[in-house]
Amino acid sequence: MHYLCKRYTCTQYYLMEKVAPTATTPRVLLIYTGGTIGMIEDPATGALRAFNFTYLQDHIPELQRLGFEISSIQFDPPIDSAAITVDLWIRLAHTIGENYDKYDGFVVLHGTDTMAYTASALSFLLRGIAKPVVFTGSQLPVGRLRTDGKENLITALQIAAERQADGRAMVPEVCIFFDKYLLRANRTIKCSADQFEAFASNNYPHLAYAGIHIRYNEKHIYRTPEGEKADLEVSTRIDPHVCVLKIFPGITPEVVQAVLSIPTLRGVVLETYGSGNAPTDDWFIEALADAVKRGIVIVNVTQCESGKVEMGRYDTGIRLGQVGVVSGFDMTTESAITKLMYLLGKGLSPQEVGVEMQLSICGELTQN
Ligand code: ASP
Image 1 (cartoon, rainbow, N blue to C red):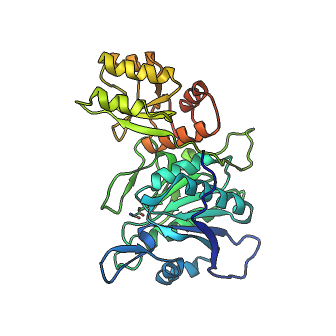
Image 2 (cartoon, rainbow, N blue to C red):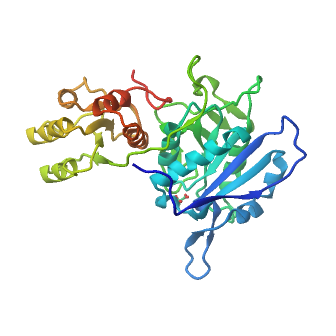
Image 3 (cartoon, rainbow, N blue to C red):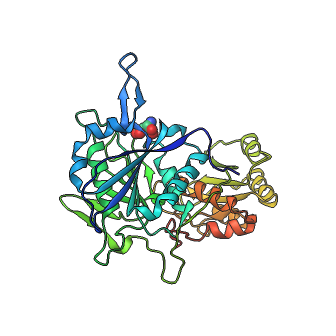
């Protein structure tokens, strides 16, 4: 189980601008974790290294013109998102929880490499959220002439501050804004290492499109169902004893057995072919059956970038269901693995986790 990290501290860093605030002036908290957006080139090596928030603000003076009250908090030190940990997810969730009542919305600047994982994790850790948490970053640092960071940040801030006519938040969920599209966090994958359009949500429509105007796709935005508790509840526990096992033609019994016999393992996201198909060799099915009997939750997601698992469609999928593998339907791997950590962290039994993995918590899957 993981609790608050000790190594990184989040410090209230800089109050960007004091506009004469009125009761309706939007208040946004900007949380800078690191990533390319705020990096500068080391003159000696040419490599990119993380820099602090003042640098970012100096390169985007337009932030002053938004007319919002923007406060910022930064990870100290800022990190490349390849260094993100579950401790930092919890720290981030706490930071939002501690500041929840003070702001209308939150923007998290994060490296693109693991943004889909962190944003998915946050969507589960922040239960009952009624305010926007918009993740963004960039493919080029803000100091570069053709940076995408500027547009991404400015639009993310506007989305975080957007309200409906009745004053409630327009997008009360955890999402990712990148290169014109606002996407549900737990539906998003990083799809390109070098294009500005670096993220995709192939199984769920975008929540907004930012052209000349920001057009919201209101019917697809998640809102806590009527009658459900609307207070924010920040989860503090995550169980990281999980893994992703991607099958491939030629995978050997040694590999599968080695993974499934890890003593602390409690959950596996099994990346299968097409609509949830896997080899039907006895050794493979028996290895899975044995793991399920030992209380390991195995969730079937597809290796394809779009579409969903239908375990009743082919014999190969049916066999998996028969030995207790559960369907992840159309969940992304990022969503499935973080949801598994979240549910296991709640201390549920393997059966309960198996059931909940197949139900939508906050719009991360569609069964039919
Ligand atoms: N390596 C960087 C990171 O994920 C890449 C980026 O931000 O785009 O932090």
